[in-house]
Image (cartoon, rainbow, N blue to C red; front, side):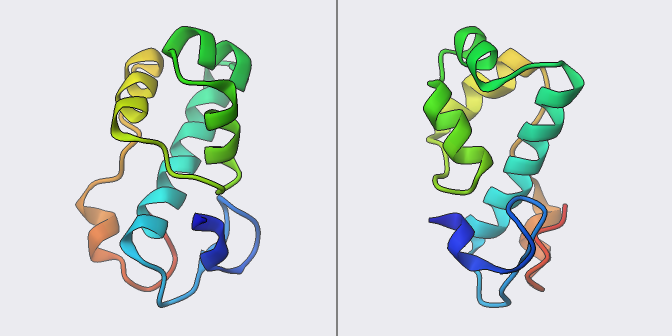
Length: 101
């Protein structure tokens, strides 16, 4: 579970432990981007689920750090929102546990 690597704060605005694996660092940035894109477009998990074909439950669990979505779900979410959600090399370079990017 990605949020198990939270050192302080609440997912996805938390600070991660220094030993957090890459999946947690990428996951926290992904969840922030997803949350922010949904807010900008005034979408909730139900409406995004309908437009993307990704289950509402998967979206909700991603937003609270319970799961990382599968590659196909990420692609469908990006298509539905019209934005890049998956973090790039800035996250790979950040190994300080911040999960910034």
